[in-house]
Length: 428
Image (cartoon, rainbow, N blue to C red; front, side):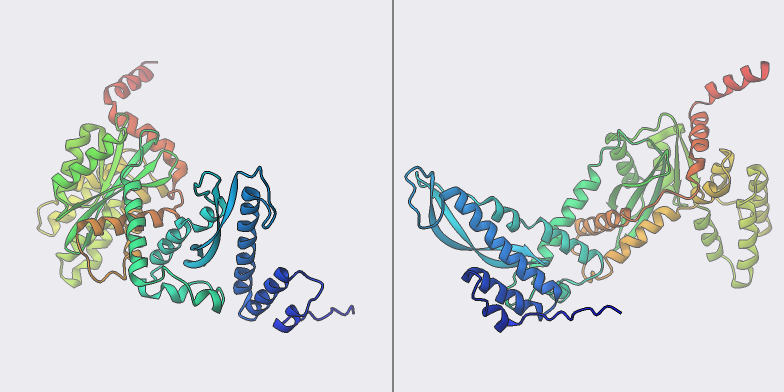
């Protein structure tokens, strides 16, 4: 068996005792050897800091020439150094950067320093940790190890600093969500649902395109799921390019305001599908415990019947059996079936599960919030949660049947054209 030589890390004494290396390299090796004992990440940080300093020096040399050598044709001169800070390991770390000025006396910016000093990456790290449920006061503990020398001078990890960065990032997320251009999206399904938070109701919209891709498209703030709020949301989507002339399926819960707003904004072009799960829950809530199981079983059988007319008749019969007026919107429980959609796609589109799943992820994102200040804060956090959920989206179950739905919606939006085509086909 071949013997593998043992690798030993050089310690501080070993690194300092390298006479053949230049002094700057020997000192850098000493720092790296110290950091190696704190861990691989800390050693990488020490190496990175040394490389960063070398980049600063290389750039200043290119601008002002080698240090200590006179050059009458130089365009800039060295002008000492000043303190600065760069983004490293989810925090701000102080560094010293060299300066240079033109012969006319103007400051020469260092491109390499500007790159490392940008805080975009730090803001992104804050957003990721907050979305993962890390409280503002715990960010310093969750940061990567960067060595005792660096971590002892770290900045931007205080609770207030983290909070400011998160507010800025969520404002960006909200603006992005509310300004998405929908003109180029072939949206065929729109799912609407309400998220109750801090005494407010945020109406959320999730779009599904013709190939089954899910896309968060908007949210609107209100005290309840009232018609005015929903109309404002839908009108905003239309203004941003949502097309519905060729048919649109709108899936929503049993709230009257949602269906009324859909009819007002989209008219007859929209086909409304009520969520069957919401209806089953609502019916069960009004029944004694001993009746809930068998009534729910009959509802499942009725809603899943392959013939929508028979299914509707069975549901009405059940309502009569329970001595209740047949529930409003019961016809809209069978819209997907009347469009001729069955199988996996029908199971997906007869419930609001996709949008509820997105809202659930948004709730997980904001679970650490203990005090809601205003409606804008609710919108910011909800938008951040929706965009966080979008990163894990897959196409809906049954997406291979979407062409069938597209054709059915076209027939629904153009009934006269569809009737004429069928008549010609029959005559032939």
